[in-house]
Length: 522
Image 1 (cartoon, rainbow, N blue to C red):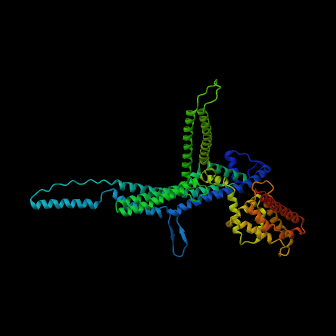
Image 2 (image 1 turned 135 degrees about the horizontal axis):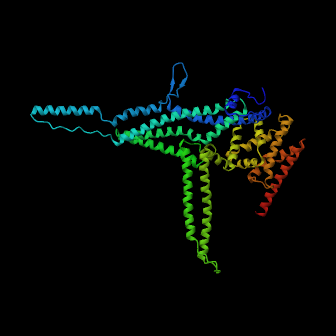
Image 3 (image 1 turned 180 degrees about the vertical axis):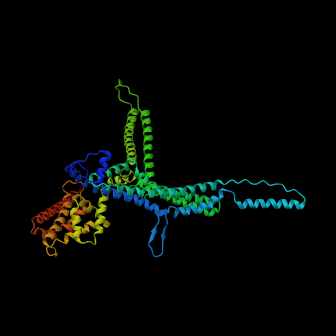
């Protein structure tokens, strides 16, 4: 077979159908090697995204489909029976309520019997009974509303189940199609083609529709239930209405709260819609305020007389100060309006990275560094019962400025976990008779001394964060005391000797500086 001939049936089909020229073996090998590095990363991303789609749809199918338990068998889920659970409940209520939309045959029978009775009574008395008009039936507005809401609820629940089933099929197709071609290049091409298709047709919005429809269906059912009981018993209807109102309030709070506070873990399928509405509201609010401020700026603009060189009047000076303030506000509103518009556009294009979910990631990345300090504090708290070698690995990986922040955070008695772990680690290797090998002891001791040295030198060397006076006092007493340092000054390792001497010198200088400040009164 020559270099230009296809190597498998799929290549033959592509060449015969589209006239695609095949690359030579050297180029094909190079491209396959490149795409073989691309595909694992892409497959990991696709697996994560498709699993999210399947999990969302599985939750919907669990809610609208029954789970049957057969004797001797495990629980068997039947997601193909879409009219299960919630749909069956809605259907049962519709069966009772739709009868209220037409006249009751029993009422017609009673009317005819009353007519016959009146006629017979008239014949017995020798009088002619007057004909009674057949009363026309018209369903009440309340019953029309109830049946409309419950019918819509049933339709939406079934549509939600169908959408969830389609979502699982889409996810399966999205992950399986790239596996069909034989070469890595063709697999990457198919995967990229499908991936950009999901962005082009906004599949993330379609996936979110199934849970959204289900929530709307439940809400319509609850509202219809409250209205239905007003025609039966007002007390029961009021109790249901209060419960539905509390449910709606809680649902609204859980939906809107993560749009305002990005660290809020709660969310509902409505949160995405509220996110767009929230940013649209902020954009239009900023736009209207800009229009008002521009109008105020033009109104307060003083007349200019270029040939008048006299000193400006006080009222003109005051107006110009106001205008400078207005210019600052206008700049803030312009940036806010552009930011909200950009978020809306990016959210529509790529909801995973820039929409509601992306705003949570941006909020986390823009959070203050104190979040990282609290996270590391939690980590060392969880390592309280772990072997000191694991603690040693984590301490070695922490940069110097973060060590200073952790020690400053240890001033709070509730957040002393890093300080205690470092203290325990230092005293476990300070002496050569602690049962550790010389290599392990030296490595651990250098890690501890390096961390202590970073904290001590911030008093003299300008850094991003400085040690607090309480921390330096703690270092002098518990980490760099004379008894411990004297033992390290005589260590065989020159790095340990120099580092311990440097720590002692820095702590001594801080003590002298503190005494000097007290002596001079500042």
